[in-house]
Image 1 (cartoon, rainbow, N blue to C red):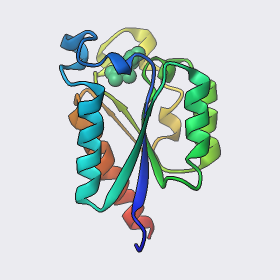
Image 2: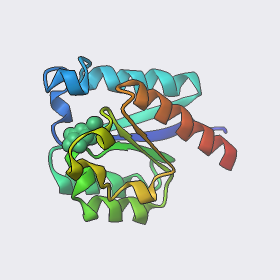
Image 3: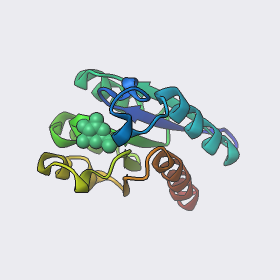
Length: 150
Ligand code: DQA
């Protein structure tokens, strides 16, 4: 690879509050801690990351659409939009890039409404319940997939 590959890390609503939001469920690390973890994990493999967080569905759709041509793959924690957003799922399908879905908590051990994801059918892998490590695993796996494509 001659140029540095880029990954997009997408964080959905309320993840800006990480560190103070229900830390017994979502952990003590802040969103910036998680972004730094993604950056350092990617850098070890020669990749760069761009990060976006929004509480607004349309802004997330815009960021996903803009990934085509700008990034090679997407790690996404759609947060509550996981369970509701056809628009985010459609955008991910439209850009046709490899997608890894991450959840800090084990959504399958929680309320029934968290157990359906519109994103999972499009994802190459789904990581739930590993806390912030899940992002590290996601970045590593996404890079492995991209390297296999080359
Ligand atoms: C979450 C799980 C979702 O159900 C919830 O709405 C979130 C965070 C997680 O990372 O565990 O906001 O995606």
